[in-house]
Image (cartoon, rainbow, N blue to C red; front, side, top):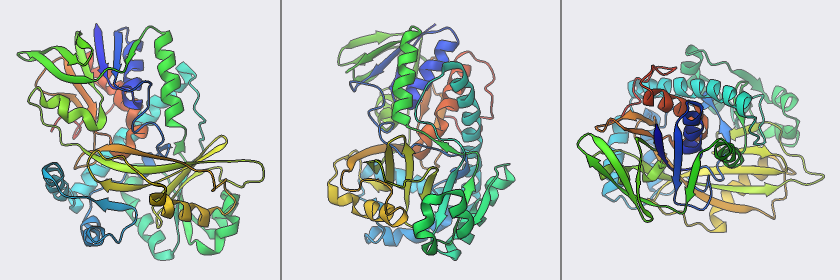
Length: 413
């Protein structure tokens, strides 16, 4: 079967890989000049089933006034146009305890499955990407937030996820880079099965493997709309002509709703802007070995070889990715407080990208009204975590065989 994959981010490329494994002819269309130029380019790099907590929960509602007043550095809301209002109303409905429990368990189930699929993919492909196994740390600066964070993870413990609660001394023993800031930290929660790695490097290297196995990648091609014949998608029109295939997979992240809309499909996905900076690590620096997330400063950091990646921000400002160095000030301040000698803080590389968020924090997988079009989009902040599992699910659905995990709550909606 000839399958056309739309999008060459980590979700699209992993989908191409799994389709190739099943013997399909695969063509990938990407509007950028190379793979992983969008949300996959310079994200936090965390693969974290242990941090699968859904975004919408009752406490989020109580924090909204501070966000509206600009008092939360790590979250911003721009002018509420029709798209944001529509998405936001749906999001508010997901901010109940019951919805939070349901959505968190869906996210964790898919994330855990994806990590299993990823292990198989690594063993089979040998793809390299500065992988760091051994766990990810959630850092807390005061006892109250540590207690609260530990309590929130009870729902994941019940689902079988393991955690280790560390006091400040135990934290330094596990990660010596915290020695200089031990007295300012209450402790941490370690998820020993979580990991990290360079998503951009993974995606580009896996794309190369896909090409070597026969996949065709066409870059600089922007999809405009689908052309259908009843419940069958016949072709996709692009700025470089029309492309036909037996089946189509939509992996365009934040841009998925526009293309799906040409078929009358409605996908509730909003682009949530994130910032990151990448810092060089040189001789004499003392960076962390394990990736970590500062739950009070709302920053995350991961080491990729001789680079330290630091990320933050959830900005609801539409498709605007413009950024200025001063916007990264609180991120630099937070990482310097944690690791005073962690990297060269005078030479940051700045980046902004868009996460495709759904109101319930779970991706959209499966078929809609057209039997030969599959959705694999809307992964939000866990695209890197969920990509491999979502790809395998998509490949199984195309073959109309049962996927390896429960798909409840993940279909088009």
